[in-house]
Image: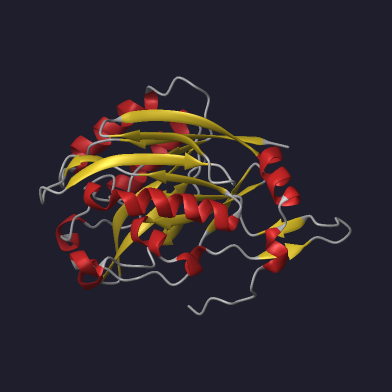
Length: 270
């Protein structure tokens, strides 16, 4: 069973300053000492969680995407995080899945945070993206999506001739966020819930520090196993951490506790 090495970068962000953020993040990426396969950055990593997309948005051939291509190629990793993208007059909080060869996929944030008027500034996504690395399937999600379990709910299908084994939609959920400290109890609780109910690993990567609206973020980035046990967490300070996820442990949990057999069938209406 293949293992997967995942590195999270929990960092402060320079408010609406792309040049400073990309320089800072490149230094952190290049300084990762371990061999790793996925590097995860926070939500809107080049700007902070800004409601000024008309000023900050880029095209898909813009500076930040080109930076991601160079960073992923240089470090030979998959690089992911969300940025502000404009297409045909619409703005998206778009999570990019950048491969080392320059190919990419993307996921547009489905649930827009109306409490901060994100729904007035951005357009909601309509479909999920489940990426693949080394036989691992990875569900990409952004911040507020965490509060809506149906959108991310695992759908399982029995495999022919494997007894209780299943074909699962995905093995890991990645949430990138700018989640304020004042609601960090929900952040931590829901990350564990998503791992338990979907019998998968979860990586939640949040920023730290005050943003341009003087909202404080405590980080509390987490990596959680399929039983809901916390493998890593860090609060209130910057950190770069690499964790090895084990596919054999994941399969063992799913076989030993085949709760998928009792799950409800459903379809998601886009």
